[in-house]
Amino acid sequence: MAMKLVILGLLMEGDKHPYEIQQVMHERNMEQYIKMAKGSLYYAVEQLLNKDLIEVKKVVTDQTRPDKTIYSITTKGKEAFQQLLKKQIQTESTHFHPMYTALAFIHHGEEDVIREALTERIAHTKMQLEMLERVYRLYGVHAPKGSQAIMENAHELCKVELKWLTKLQEEAVKGIFYEEKVSTEKTRPKE
Image (cartoon, rainbow, N blue to C red; front, side):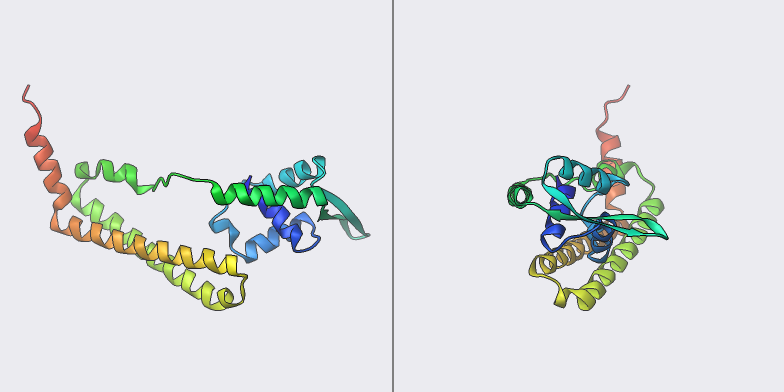
């Protein structure tokens, strides 16, 4: 659903070839928040074409390159875009953080391994935060309001993530996770 929304949304901005759509997605860092499998763009374009949501506007022929098909959105496509937009806004999701599984068993981990992993994770999150701030300074001020909202949200989430990771690291240094391991072992029934 998201890929079709992106394609239709970008065609609302003007006619494009699928490669141009891909380039705009890259320029706007959409790969940060849209899962896109290789080949899914061209597959989605084909599906939209078959449903008459987009149409071939023109085919550019060049002797040195393959033909380039430019697509435009149809009236039916504009209606579908509005429905997809509404549906995407209303879509709820459960957040599955990759660390949740590890945290469920962290009390079985070795203290030095946990501290090292958290230190590396914090360093990576700091780099992400710096990158988000740099991207916002360069592009955010000129981006459409919706794109600015995405960047602001990503920035705030990254700051919260960094705060949470720092707290976990402080607890790891204090040995709190190890204490849980000891208390778990004490409460086990003896065989």
